[in-house]
Length: 303
Image 1 (spheres, rainbow, N blue to C red):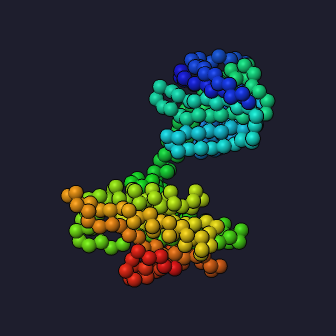
Image 2: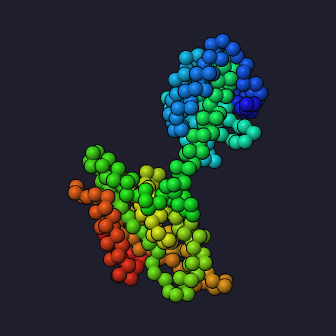
Image 3: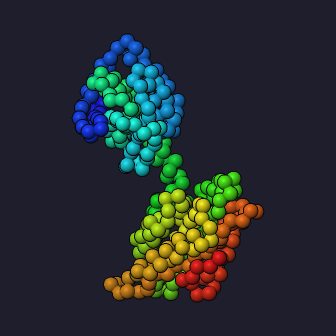
């Protein structure tokens, strides 16, 4: 298959160059044997990190490499098998069918022209396996992600929480859970929310993600119900995050027929892990705290 690879090579001076590789069979002998080996071994996995490990291991036998970084922004994928290095060369992997992202090779010594040509040639056996791995990644991600908000889904929540609990106990770290729900609305406002549900829920979900940390995991459990797993977070830290999230909803307003209906408010139930908690018991305590907040009129944080 003819593959277009746009190369972007960088040294300390950030010098760039671009190339287009139109022939995949430019080398013979040992390099052709290595291409055949790569073609075979790269069919053995659909996991992107494993593919990069296999590729790095084989290619390093002819061009010394310290690591690889792979980035595909469209698929929200980033994988690194790399140490800090002075020099790098990066290639955008573009075929007639796909933009497969960018792969960057790293090492401490500057790449020679001959080594760059070898790397460019050895990229072709990676194209098909990488495309298959990306499709597999997309399919797996879709099974665990809410299509409206991009958050994790309820069925994946408990297994992830169980893992976080085990890690927290092993490292003697705190862990907290927040249950976040839009407060009950009047009949007319509920009808307006239904009409605007996609916009309102997506906006609210994005705010929750923005106000949480990158180490936190956010899930959508129901139409207006969310859960946040806050790793390495004690009661006071969880309350700070809960307050930010609660306050963030105050400028969200439901509108029907160009008339302002009602501002959204949130109730938050908070639970901090104890030594005897399981995922089910921790969620149950957070849910009961949420129920207490709503019984007290809503727009509250309760633990």
